[in-house]
Amino acid sequence: MNEKSKEPFFHIVKRDALPWYKSIGIRIAAIVLALILCAVVTTITTGINPIRVYESIFLGAFGTARKTWITFQNISILLLISLALTPAFKMKFWNIGGEGQVLIGGLAAAACMICLDDKLPNVLVMVCMVIASIAAGAVWGLIPAFFRAKWNTNETLSTLMMNYIATQLVAFFTIVWEVPKGSGKIGIINQDSNVGWLPQIFGSKYLLSILVAVVITVFMYIYLNYSKHGYEISVVGESENTAKYVGIKVEKVIIRTMVLSGAVCGLVGLLLVGSINHTITTTIAGGQGFTAVLVSWMSKFNPLTMVLSSFLIIFMNRGASEISTNFGLNHSYSDILTGIILFFIIGCEFFIAYRIQFRKKAEKEEQ
Image (cartoon, rainbow, N blue to C red; front, side, top):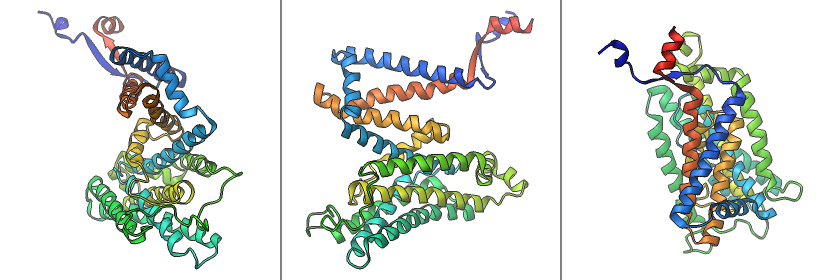
């Protein structure tokens, strides 16, 4: 048996950087293939026309003006949390604590609304809410960062632990502030006076979070790609030893980045309590602190790409209720379709980064 016959039939070879239009083309092809597979699965398992299912998903997200506004509001919240986690992930700091940082920011906002209701003018209450929420989120990010920087503790465990602590703090104060006593919930805070209710932009109660998301997206893109801090985050993420060699203070970068990450999550908590829900519960973040991890990684830490990833996930989630209503399919079916689409989107990144080279083609190239 000659040496050539022992060679594998194909090799996986790393590509040179693809032109942007080719990489976009591969992603579009992946989405089309995913939709075709979803259609086949729908037909086989339910016998329902898949076009009708897709139409229902679309109507669930954009069927009315109100549904459209809520969809974009939900996209903005998921996008903000994803943006908050991204600097830490780019630094190879595994911040799984977005949920807790949002909760603690929301708790700080609720505390200001309840405790300062009749003590300060509304404008000062809102100022206190902004400061308290951002500061609380920043502290919740600072604690695991400090221990990682000083004693190299495992940040995955510590940030998860901080989620649990934040959840229990919210649960505790829910009992302290419950209305009426014994109900186990706070209810709408300051419903009569509207103290601490953040202002509506152009008369719309949905627009504030969307505008904040636009501003933070632009800020984070510039911060990560064109600032000195962003450069230092990239270097630390590549190699802490290299960063130390070129004079970057790694401990300082870790703490500063996690303070920023926590502060933006705290801002999300402020929006959820002060602008969207006007109350605080242990589930107010809706698990989006964990979904944001997927969005950030799927987008390769690119703030602009995160807009599309957040849109896709929220679009499918919003359409789930419409599927349930129209066809009697539960929310899990929408999750199946979402999982298939995400699998194809994530999988297509392999074909963007690598190519398959077959043996005969390789031999011709060598000749």
